[in-house]
Length: 279
Image (cartoon, rainbow, N blue to C red; front, side, top):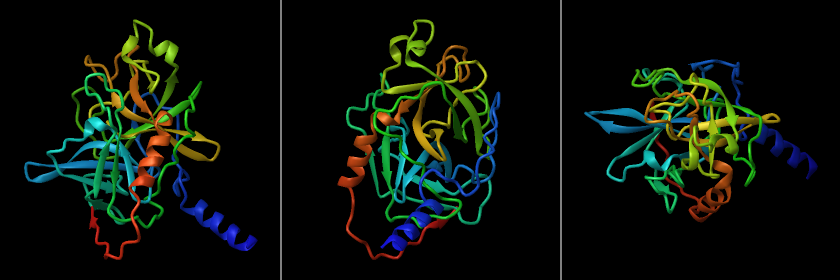
């Protein structure tokens, strides 16, 4: 029995949550930079079909073998979506990457587009994925946990500047967490920001931008990486406005809802052959 437990733990560590096979460089940066290939193996590209081709629209985070976490504002019920996994360069096919149509899309109830409250959604993939060194889930944070005096990372294929181009290579940037007391000051975000949100950045240099929406604010705790935020919004004046940090949905405020939803949507074993598209 002890040997079986040890084997299980070793396998879980090899392809468990939050421990990438290719560790990120995780250097402190002023602006975004190219990520080390496949060092953020939970990062997905959510794509929509526009003008005859699939195009990147948002990011997202793999949090289980068949579940992806993204932002509610990324979802339009009138569009079809593909979840691209195991990607680094969106401009070229890459061995081991996959493109999968979600089986279900569940937007958080009481999602409000005007106030951006409850800006999260879950995408259920049709079958559990076989994890590998390029496709692994991030860990969820403990329910109710609050970040203090931490540096976390934003990752994504969003614009590299306000109204700028979308990069083909996955970008990463380190961002300092801004506490709620500061972020809710009148000259910052005021009462627009809620306690169910996280602010990061605000130095006028590092920020999320269009195309990063839905992607992770990822923070390391011990040896594992946890997805603490879902990229939600920036200032209408631009992506990197001073004292207007990027705002994220605080995942720890919804951890119980996420776990309950995944449990309620569980399926009995399915025997269909799984034929994903190579991306």
